[in-house]
Length: 228
Length: 123
Image (tube, rainbow over all chains, first blue to last red):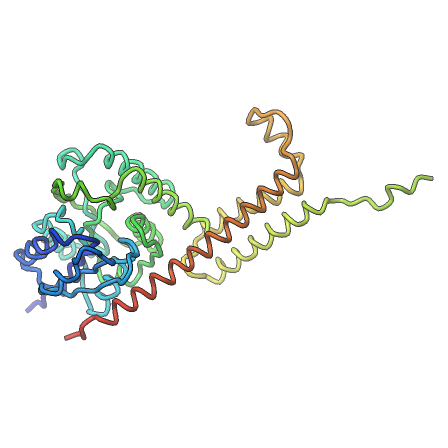
């Protein structure tokens, strides 16, 4: 008899009161009930919504950035002895139907990290984000020595081994790139799988997403992390 | 017999100060790297060596900037005062940003520990 793995879905959020309930219910409909949501100091009452949902709700008292929220969630997952952790964005752009593909990738191969790759053409990604992502992909290769097809995707899966190894210090969006550096540094095995992204008017309106300005900030952080 | 140039400095004071600071930064980086300090890598150590080593070389052998100036197509040498001022400002910014970064990380750690203290006990 095989023991089903302890799979935890991790969602960092910041001011997602309008959509977070639907996001969580969508994940639960796919049969995943262990969900950690880290509220990164929201000011719109997101945390109050979480408290009425069947999730493990953690709260940063002040906003520290997506990277910091993900680290908090991964620490919690370690404490809860997760076998696999799958990270998703909290604005509903990631499709819960894809989770099974992450689980399948972990089950079939001895993989440490599964990276979701957005289909940039098909998913109707806004042009500014396409440019920012292209630049980020190239810079990630130049600075961190790892070439993947979507360095900024937040839909990723980590094994327990990967969580133990990955050590990041970035609090902001450059977290995604820093994880790739850690994969390269610790020689973690990884695979890329296609994911579907739903760009809704709501997700496009979010100010904290990757754009050119944040791309420059990410570049600055990546260089700074090398220098210091 | 002429005695006026008997005591002739090999290097100027600014050259010694800049190179001293550079050596200090390189040694600090080397200690961090070889004692396997947190988040240290060869690339990081190499970049530090390149930047601070470059500053020391330019400070000790300023004539090298003539070669550099002609190579990049500029006319004239770099003024020693401007160079020194630039290096000092760079040093200060570098240190200030390091301190800010460290404080930011400490705040994040405190925030994280507070959040995790509310984690329900493992079933």
